[in-house]
Each structure stands twice: as structure tokens, then as C-alpha cells.
Image (tube, rainbow, N blue to C red; front, side, top):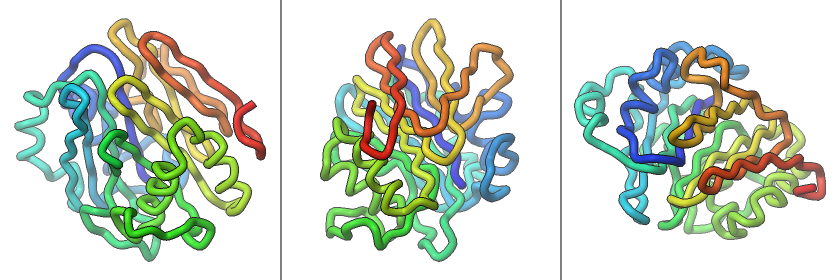
Length: 232
């Protein structure tokens, strides 16, 4: 459930990541190619981007394919760092803007592709929504992004059925986990894309192995295996 995408590199139009590619998030909202759970991502969409070091967000509980206003504005939105997602809500979770990624703590933007049992997570008033993804995002923010690998491994041990693909950025770092769902990476001359699935048929897309963490900083990409004890 859900598809998401992250970008770190040169300033590019948001539309070049979400709207223009032949299999971009707009198409993935109604015809994803690699989605294992669910057929549609019609329960909302969101994009977050950095204006300097300031995270900005545009979110909706409507399907992305019908957002003609966003389509007209997206080419004018430019950023060096972007997190975007289309949502297929976990059964029983609210369909509302506050439940739609990306979530933020004021410094990081974060998207969750997956599902987790909320009973294994602490519920705080700082969570943006009562949906599982928002509560998980809040737990990650509270524990700190430098502990992302440990947090995901511990939550995965507490809920063995959880799917915990995370994508997050703070303007200078882009981090992701592959845990129970697909994740691909494209190293372009002008930056790096991390996505639930490739947005085109470029042969340079690489699949990230399951139970791995990816960190992009500048032109450096590190992929690290995760186990039940965290990063190894």
C-alpha cells in the first residue's frame, strides 16, 4: 500500500518527479506496476519540498489523478530535496489530510509505505493523526533519525507482520528503509532518486534488497544491511 519517492540533488521542478515521468506517482496512483498490497492509491497524496532549509508541504485526501490545480502549479515548484507519496489507507485508518504523508517535525519530511500494528507504538499528542503511519513517524522523530535503523528493526521485531518502508529527508540528507516492500534507487548525473518503484524504464534503476537502509548525502550513497539488532 502506498507509493512514495524522494529526491536529493540539483533544483528540479516537482512535476519532473511526480507528474512528467511515464510511470510517475500520478500513474502509480491508479496503475502501480510493483505494488504487492492493494491495486489503487486513491486515498490521498502529498508532496513536501525544501525552500532553503524550510520544509513546505501540499497534501490532499483526494486522488492525485484528479488534481488539475496541482498539475498546473507543480512545474513552478522547484527544490533540491523532495518527498512525495500517494496513499492507499490501511483498513480502518482515517482518510484525511493529517493522515497523509509526508509528515514533519519541522526539520524532516517523512513518508511510510506499509502497515504497522499501532499497539506496538507509543501514542503521543505530537502525532499528526491517529493513523498507523503518523504514529510511526512520530516515534521515529522522537527517537531521532540517526537511530532509524534501530527503530525499524525494533518495531519489526515487535510486529513481525509490519511493512516498514520509510523515506525521509531534511534538505541535506535522504534516508530510506526497505522492510517488507519494494524500493529502488536511480543515481542520476544531477542527483539521486529513491522510490517504491521505478518511474520509467531507465536501465540504471537498481533494486534495494529487503531489510536494508539507504542514506544519501551529497553524491555519496551508502546501503547498509539491517538485522534484529539494528544496523550492521
